[in-house]
Image (cartoon, rainbow, N blue to C red; front, side, top):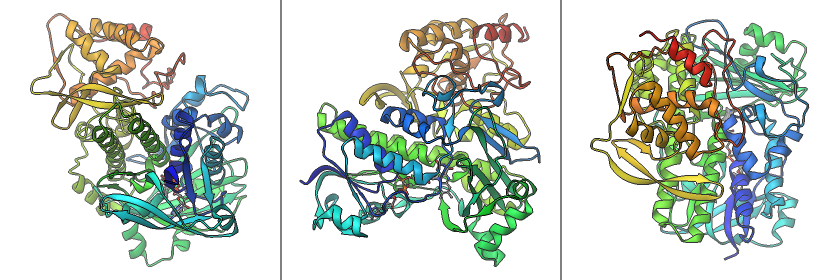
Length: 607
Ligand SMILES: Cc1cc2nc3c(=O)[nH]c(=O)nc-3n(C[C@H](O)[C@H](O)[C@H](O)COP(=O)(O)OP(=O)(O)OC[C@H]3O[C@@H](n4cnc5c(N)ncnc54)[C@H](O)[C@@H]3O)c2cc1C
């Protein structure tokens, strides 16, 4: 074999995979084959905080910070039933402190993300992979995949430019022990290996975008901070993402059907959107377009399988969720991280190879699906889409989705509240608080909390069987014991494990939450206790929605009335020594986390 791992594509998925493989095993020979010579432009610029942990693990967060990209503290949306703008924040601007840059990945910066110019971001990642020792064949295209049944036996290579000729030095093919497709939406190896894709949604959109020079930023928060702007118009939505002091990404998304029926060219629709939307017209007044209008179709899908005998699918080749949630790179780089862990464990030979591959496939596909479900809800619940009304109704019908808030919440958790972190109550990359808050903003109504009106909570494991699922941490895969029933999983791990353990000793809410916190302190000694109440609340909510907990009303104890709503994320609460709350205590609808506030909240419930 020429190398251990050969990767098609040097985008974020390919470089993340290469970097992590070399970081954890510097003996591995990893080759990344990229047809372009970086830097090259790419759409997809707004990141999520969840991804920051992957960048930090790769050792590249400081380099990204040094590039001085705008700090994303959240997003501002016009979406749903009202014309008012609302924000979904990782950290509210009132809490975002003036802090010199470059900063460290600590404190408030663990909660924020970046808005990145992809030509720079992707190059930093690829250079980092190279610095860690990956062999990079830039300007070289994989033009054919050699295979034997479900085994890949080699890549045929061809240079696309002089750099490629120099890199290849006459080489025409490469063989490896493992092959990975990180070729983005071309999905080169996925197609070659005959993997079907499933589009579990009628979301069939097109995106049309250009870059602008000298457009104004909609907001300036602290030093370098801002929010992305997402504005729905009757026939689609506009993104406005500052990428640096002078450059802004400005795009339009509409349904493929609408584009066709309008009889207009993408250029015409784009100009119409930019000039007719007053906020955007104002922000772009003093700016000018780079005039490199681009279009792409953006159809959500998941590949039917993500691995074969000696190959894996990474990034957009494995699946894609509509960009409304800014989840693409989080999915792509997290998935690549799991492939790196899987290959490292396959080489160690301590865990069952079939289980390792299945776990990657199961967790990544459900992560992508959760994002798609959430995106479906966003579209179907948007009252602004006047000309797309029937289209949105079709999405709702396809998904079997009703728009009652409670129903929507339960539907979103129907595939289980799972994320890339086993043991955390999330759906995709979003907390349960965020999901409820979004439903509230879009429907104008508050989804009831399942634990509302009860005061005692009993563990219900009836009919569940035991299994073992993978947890991906610090370069190793751990096999974690979990209960399984129907499509739901209850890991004996982190918050889910702590809650189940606490519930075996106590059922009444207040002492239960105290035991939960004690159990969390025991399991994750450095976790921030001030977040335990909020984490516990969301964990309980998920466990009720999935049937793991039966809520009850016992006499004499206080009854829970949850009046509060998180207006953002609660990410990274397990990070060492970091006090995390994304909640703004000054907002009337905010829940304030921390034990004092918890006690106040409990004191204010009706007896
Ligand atoms: C309209 C739109 C908006 C988006 N907005 C966001 C957003 O706001 N936030 C977000 O996180 N994500 C967003 N995304 C998604 C995001 O862009 C992708 O998820 C991300 O780029 C996936 O990374 P990747 O490494 O899998 O693929 P890519 O970044 O596409 O990289 C694949 C690489 O493979 C190379 N390649 C392809 N074929 C070959 C070959 N045969 N040989 C050699 N090299 C090859 C390509 O040149 C490319 O460099 C958006 C996507 C779209 C379409």
